[in-house]
Length: 148
Ligand code: HEC
Image (cartoon, rainbow, N blue to C red; front, side, top):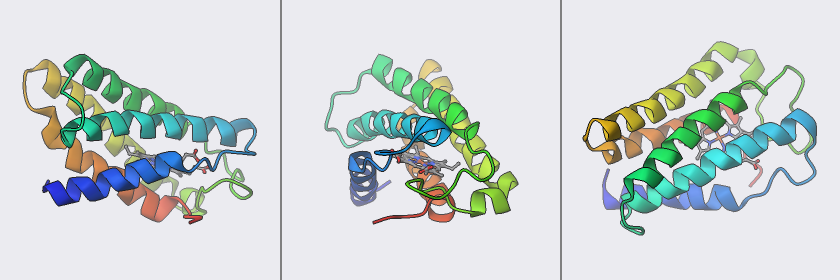
């Protein structure tokens, strides 16, 4: 990933992290937003390292990737039919094409798992950062309504 692409991706992460759409949300919608916010926070840590903003700390990177995996798994369990609308940014496409939605979630969970495995094997997990960024963007483009 070029420096410029990383910067663009980081801007996306930093801006999404600042949008507290879950204000006023309740129940399962609030829960999935909190899980998704945690995914955002963990991703921010990895992106800051990729940009050289923070010194690389493998234990912190590992924890961040584990957090992405954990919170993404939990978020994916919290999209019951009919839970869109209101403050939620969940797009109707989630229920129109649940198989594709699940596949996007599984792709990110798989990348987070690969990140940890690569780290443990002494490889370069930062090479996966562009793919992780694309995974967020691909799913959001189709399955998240932008309220901006
Ligand atoms: C499987 C699809 C999918 C993937 C992959 C995904 N997201 Fe999301 N994300 C969503 C949906 C859907 C919402 C809106 C949930 C709602 O408002 O009910 C959302 C909301 C968010 C929010 C706003 C949470 C809030 O407080 O409202 C953030 C931040 C976020 N995602 C970050 C990320 C990051 C960072 C990644 C990649 C590491 C990512 N997401 C990957 C589907 C996904």
